[in-house]
Length: 116
Image 1 (cartoon, rainbow, N blue to C red):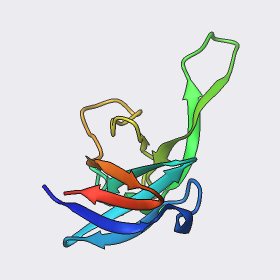
Image 2 (cartoon, rainbow, N blue to C red; image 1 turned 90 degrees about the horizontal axis):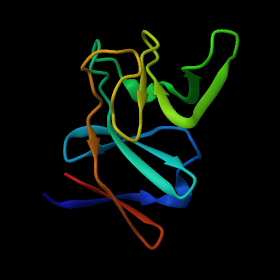
Image 3 (tube, one colour; image 1 turned 90 degrees about the vertical axis):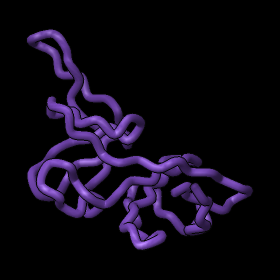
């Protein structure tokens, strides 16, 4: 495994995926506050470019007559079929075994490195 410098954190827009070619792989970096997530730019559902999707929250389980919205800026929604993925775990919120491929990110000062 090697660390690859990708960008300065200040060059990444808040909650907007930015796609980079890192060692021949299409990887999206998503900045949420002072944290950065690295995601393989392939939706496990139908292999869509998932990083063309949007960051959002989602409806959480709640009582029958209540609507609870949560996980704001933690959910990446695929642009093709609307599948939602938790950026913390890569797991789909749609049920099933599909997961995004996540990569470790290291911040050194304001520089973003991805481990591949």
